[in-house]
Each structure stands twice: as C-alpha cells, then as structure tokens.
Length: 477
Image (tube, rainbow, N blue to C red; front, side, top):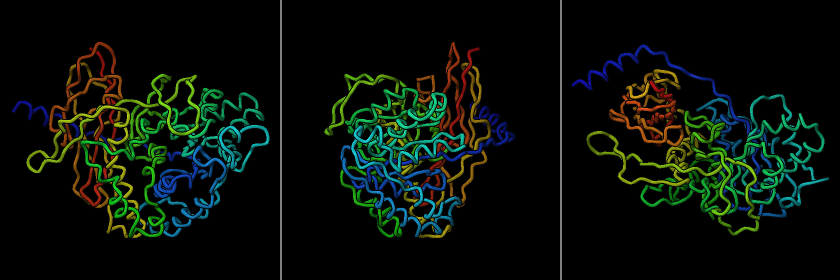
C-alpha cells in the first residue's frame, strides 16, 4: 500500500509538468552504391526512397566494388526512382515532404568504372566525385553523411582532389562535415581514407568478414527469436506483391536481405536514433570509438586487403539483451529467460520494429490514410535529460503521448546500460509497461549517466513503434 501511495504522488506531480519537444533537422546523405553487384542494393534503394521525406537525399552515385570492378549501373537507380515517382503522390497523403522524382533523378550520378585505388589519383575525377565536392561546399552547416553500399573510391577521389586543390584550412573545414558509414570494406580505398584523413568520422566493421560485422544482423537468422520479418514469405506479402510499382522493384534475396540498409537506418528520426553519437545505439546498430585489435579480425572471401587500423574508428560494440515476450494473461509483457550478447544484438534487437515500419510505409504507396497505420507520437512529462541523487527514487512519464490513428497504445520502459556510463542494469521498480514508472537510482560515488528508453507501440496493422530516450544523470550526495 505504501508503494502505491508513493507512485500516486509521483504520477500526480508529473501531470503538471510541461511536454518538452525539439525540432529535428533532416540528415543530409549521399549514397554510394555498387547496384547490380547484388540484389540487396536495389532492395535498400526501395526502402531508402520511402524515407526520402525525413532524410535529405543529396546524391545517388553508382560505383564499383570488389564484387563489380569494371562497371557502374546508374540506369538501375533511375528505374527504381521512376517507380517511386508513380507512388509519390499517394505517399504525400500520409506525410508531407516526399520529393518529386524529377528532383531525385537529377541527383543520380556515377563514379569511375574502375576498382578501388585504380580509380583514385590524377585525372581520376568523375561526375560522382565532383558531385560530392559540390555538396560539401554548399553553405549548409549540417553534416554530410556518405552511406557506402559498395566501394568507397568515389569519396576517396573527392578527398584526393580537395586536398590537392584547396588550402589546408579549407580541407579541414570540409572534412569536419563528413560522416561516413560503410558496409565493411568493399575495396582498398577505405583503408587509404582512414590512413590519410584520420580526422574523418568513420563507422565501419573493418575488413571483409561480413559474417561478424554488426550490419549483417539485419538479415542474420538468430536462434531463439522469431525471425519471421526477414523471411521471404514476409517480404513477398508485405513488400513485393500488391504494393504498387515500387514494391514490384524489390528483387528476391540472393545472398542476404538488404545488407546496405543499416548505413542509413541511423538517420531516420524515430526518437531513439542519434546519428552523431553511435555509442548510444539505434536502428543502425551501436558502435564505439576505438582502435580494433587486428589479430581478432578475420579475412573474408574477397580480395580486399586486410591491414591493421592506424587510428580509432567507430566500430562493433557489444550489447546484452533480453527480449520482452507477450503474455496471454495478466501483465502484457515479461522479459525472456534467454539473454543474448554480442555486437549483432545492437542491431537485430530493433529489427521487428524497423521491418514493420518499412511494411507500413509500403502500404502508404497504394492506400488511403484511413486504410493504413501510422506511427505513434511519444511524449514525455519531463525533460529528456534529468538529474537525480545517488540512491534516490525518480519517476519517468509518457504523459501526452498520442497516436494519429487513434490506436490503443502499449508502453515499455527499459534501461540501456551500454549507452550510458553506468554499465550495470537498472531495474524498473514498477511494471515496465505502465505509461509512468518508478525507478530507484543506484548508489554512486561519482557522476554517472544512465539511459532509459521509452518504447511506444500501437495496435494497428502492422504494429508500429517510436521511442523517447531519457538520459538520467546520477549525482553523488
């Protein structure tokens, strides 16, 4: 009874708290893709265009890779963009900001049809490398993300030209705006970039051992969980068939579903992602800044050389995760008895959420607003960063959360230890699925940070989730 009284006191206090919001700026991105080397580039391109209203696509550049060394295929990008153009007007019924396909066509470029460092150097400029420089030089303070789905030599050539033609101060200014997320190393120019431009923000699972890379969790079958949303049957029903001309452009899986998609998942505004801070974790996985141990990196099957890193990079980070399971009776959810721990966990833990989100947006291509689902809009009854004293209790509230379709909502609060400085798991002291919960801060002798995630899921079809992240600063007494 005393515990309930405490909860009522805290929840009542939250009712008078204002709702804090922030304006989200679209992330700029240029895509480098070895499209046609593997169907997964086309798959990822279909998904990317469905988020073109919340990601500012600045370029779509066809490149080579170790799997496609002597050709580039911009015409394949054109076909997918043209299919997008046929559904763009229907997408606008659901959210604003979807660009017209003509503007996207103008952003399709190509790099040299040469492999790796053979395409970098004097006289190696291309339409693609010049376009990267042009966008970098625009008067826009936002970082420019380079999402690399194949080889990275088009970016390497842009950097080569920048360094050759500009004063050092200008070079440093432009490099400071770059954010690179590469799907492992698919040519030999990635290592060259990291050696020669050590200041570049660079996310990569180094080498070509794709099986151990964080990004590969998007299509990895995980024993002990439900893998339905990456099945061919699920893709046929929810993406490929009956969803208009864009869905029809989504090819069957050959080697792995959408291996390139993680490179832009972190740019989608969902309340969880913070692209500038890969250590916080999100749909694109979680990464930490360190110099990896070269002796533990395995060689894959390509001819991309494997060399020790000469600098710190944003790379694989380990998460521990217990999924929550649905209960038929009583409290709606319960933590699984099984716990998973490795770097891939940091990505696949969100997989059902981003797959359902993809399926919902594909529904938007052909149906009216009333016929389909739209994501909930989480809110907090307090700031996104709060201070508490060591050992003291505090409350977290999702008051003000809404849903555009009027759907019933489910709430789930959980601590994300790896994202903060306090690495021990902090238990929610009340039911985790209440809209407002009570937590007791651990006892600390120095300032620590703990991240708590609010996940709000509607009961539409498919079920959609959005998040709020609360950073709790725990201060010693």
